[in-house]
Image 1: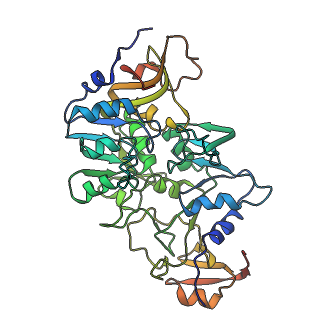
Image 2: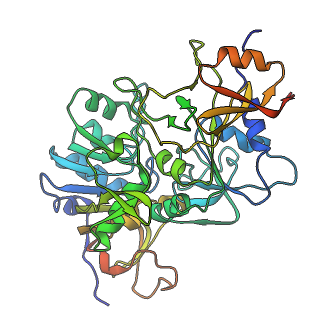
Length: 225
Length: 221
């Protein structure tokens, strides 16, 4: 099995270009690739699109933040495609003042749009959002008498993924509720950088338990100890 | 009669709906309290939309695992028989009708079964998260809310004014004054909770209420 390049976090984020759509795994910071996020924060781009479940947590009183919140604080993105921003007042401020274009997407729809892109589908038909603002501007499709919204597939340029273990070919397993959007985003981008807590030799992962097949992964980064 | 908000009574009444083995998703906040009042002999299987089922209680201090959190980001545990999955699987379970019930918080709920709970334009825009999928997908949708907001206005309305989370999906509204079923464009009052009366509820609620023929008083104390 061919090995994937193992690079540092700083080298990895150089693969991200200004204007790219970047998918970042994690749910309120759980399962986020913290080393890659720190490297991207240093990188200094400002016009990227963030695709993520949430903008993670930020407490303005204590300054504490997790997940992608440091990237939000440094305004690394001009657009965010997100399901939930309630735990980060800074992104709410940026949205209200027109500094960042925030596109809110129902969480299940976001997951399925990303999966669809990775699976070569044009989109999905979902009942979620019918009769709400989410329906605005979208096509309603009737199938056997039931109505659905047509939600288009959502791909990105680069995915930043956090795995528990990856073998050197790129097969990945995840850690508890840290799995969330990671395996989906790994399917939907041309460049897929996996920050693994542990990188093991090919053959060490049981093929029965691999969650992300190596075919999706382009680069590996050793996670922070 | 003076209104006294009572979240525990809302949670207690909703908990009595569930059967042993029901797979349920409880929203963050008031809905989470429902788990504390599940009757003896009933085991709920809790689904957590961030990617697992078999949600268990918070671990003892010092035993938290940062990789195991609920949909509010708080440390939790997983019970024997639980399992992890990705977000697409999580919402396939939710949207695909595999969840018996969801309990969600409320900004406004109306007699058509419309729910608004994710946005106050210009003021509070947390985003819908998983609420839109849960409302559409769960077999039974419980809206759990105090009967009145901080200003004393009825949270049950004829028509929601805020942007909707979902249209015509709410089955039951449980407040701290009574239990209502949403049916044929009205709130059907099934139970009123001691010390409130039917007259009080009819007078103070800003919506069309039909009093069920079997409507009864229930003491949740």
